[in-house]
Amino acid sequence: MSNEIEVVTSWAEFRQKWSGGEKGQNFLIRDAMFPFKFQPPPLEDVMDAVRRHENTRIQKTRRDASQLTGSAKFEPFPELRDVPREEVMQAVIRDGVNIAHFDAREFAGPSQVFDGLNKVFDQ
Image 1 (cartoon, rainbow, N blue to C red):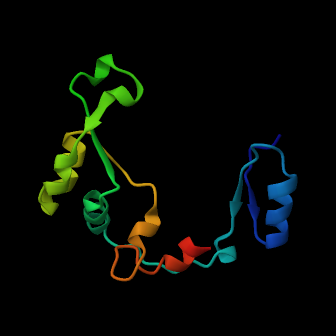
Image 2 (cartoon, one colour; image 1 turned 30 degrees about the vertical axis):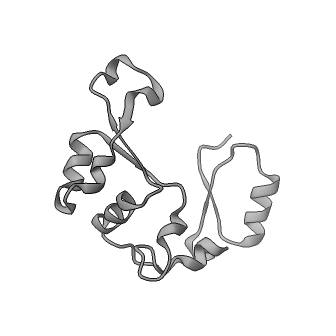
């Protein structure tokens, strides 16, 4: 077994690797197969939009986390929604914050932080 990762450059190669490849075999997809023209917004804009969304889960590391396992290491931290924008990144690092949202389409409409990705999400 080779340690070299193969690169797929056409749809025919992709279909062959996807359906006929060994289980667990990794391969790269050449970017020309999926032309992607999107300038991502600044991270601060993304963090601000995501942290304020009602379906976002925000948790921070509990003080006694070293004695706990799994999800018990975290507790809700809704206060991050109200932290001034300039302080959000420091709060995330300082408090061991996890921010999760499970549907990026919520941020892809007109005037949203991921405006322009609508076509990608609709495929």
